Length: 247
Image (cartoon, rainbow, N blue to C red):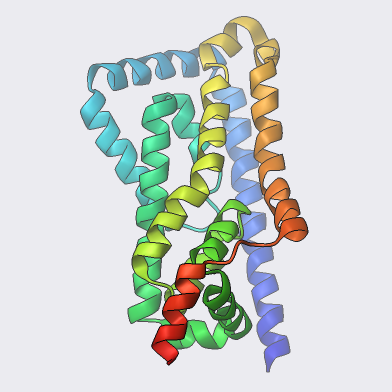
């Protein structure tokens, strides 16, 4: 029975990818055929002018859209777009709080509504997380966040584990902040459409942009390398608390 189920999932993914590919090709053809880059650049200028003239409203709308998208799988790379539109500090604030809010929603749904089904689906990961939480405490989840283990696993499994909500929240914010800042900076360094229309692809020749993109790719690998060579620090306070509770 599991084989047909797996086959059906693969067919469904293939169908979704095919439809998405066709839509992207159609969109690219339409833009290339009927919309000029200069027209898009003019729309961008109007959008940026509106954001500048209505900073509070634009921030609220941007935060709401980003927070909603965090609950939709497969919408990675949003931080680059927000950095491109809002600038570094506003975008970092939106991305950090939005990701934390979305993670907490999944955490609480997993803990209070879907815990049994998540424990059945991720039985080994839940057991592994509880084991590491007893030994390393918050450092373990912090390491998972900095290593960019997929949110679709960490968020629901954390809700099904024994970790406290406050620990989950602060490790999510602290662990994702370095990568968030780098991704936003990539967006900040990307050229505007007006620059592209004026200078062409040469607008992408930017050393800080290249370094930031390298940082995006290297950070998770660097964290995993450090963990593999030095391990995860042990939370002594957590261990003492567990020992007192068991005694």
